[in-house]
Amino acid sequence: MAQEFYVYDLERVSVSFLGLMLKGGAGEGGFIKVTPNAPYYGTKTGVDGSVTRYSTGDRMCKIEIICQQGSDVNTQLAAVCEASINAPNGLGVGTFNLADLNGAALLNSPAAWVEGMPPAEYAAESKDRTWVIMAAKSRYFPGGNFAVTAP
Image (cartoon, rainbow, N blue to C red; front, side, top):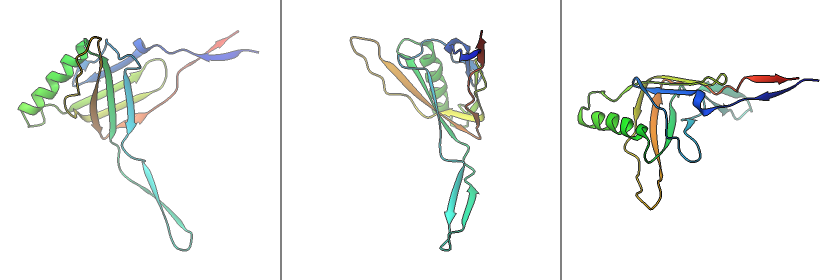
């Protein structure tokens, strides 16, 4: 009987923000983490036990980009953040796209921005930096990876 196994390669995860390809210098423990801001649905229970499910309408996602201190991604995101601070007219707001080409995971947002500059530590060894990008009106689908069938 054939067994399935799954293949994953970080090099096949494509991330772009404001037209910039964010690639290279992934942090020690990972590169990207996506967290929905809130549940898509809530419930209310009446005194008689009836339940109503309602949409929260919250499609915001928090995206954490974790890179090594020397990564060029730091320079790219710092430039976007600095431009946004110095031109508060929406200059730093734009599209964010993530696609896992190993499978079906996707995240698209027409309105994403860098939350601010990350904390930075300067020590004897290189340290990771974590950038936070907030993505409004997100379409997020955390699908799995493609299966490979082994004989």
